[in-house]
Length: 212
Image (cartoon, rainbow, N blue to C red):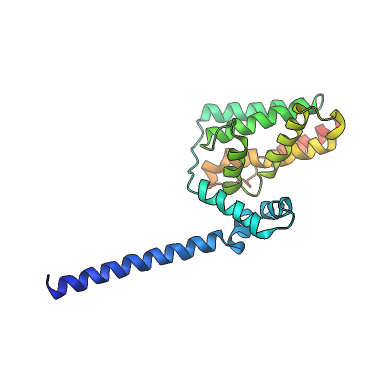
């Protein structure tokens, strides 16, 4: 083998090693404390609190979420499905006035179905679905957690008074933010902070006050 060929091979090997090292450093930064805080926002603090202040344990959990679901690519919604989901949200919002618990239940089911349609794990795997949503929609995912807690508390036989109307209204408002995020992600790059839900929020606030 000639000296020139050897030199070329050495250069290639060095380049591959350097690229691998750079990738490792980038991943380490993305999964480090500051990177996780930026990525998860309030969900970072909630996870730390759930681990009784154990930052390392919380970051380990959040890092695992990113590793498992970070590569997920959201699928666009068909126009007909989008219209159906919007209609179902509107129906649940109207139902809240007379039957807030049933409205929250309907919203919990709707969020699970929309997330599944966007390519997230299915609704039958709530924990996995939630973890994946938290990676890609960290700002608004807590709304899903709140409505799901109301539903599961009722299913598990918790007292009917455990979640009051105001608490359920707030859960619905937070859930609406995630719903808008999922509905608009394929149009706006996942920001989910457009105007689609602003008028709905105002209308919902007025309806909820009447129904409380």
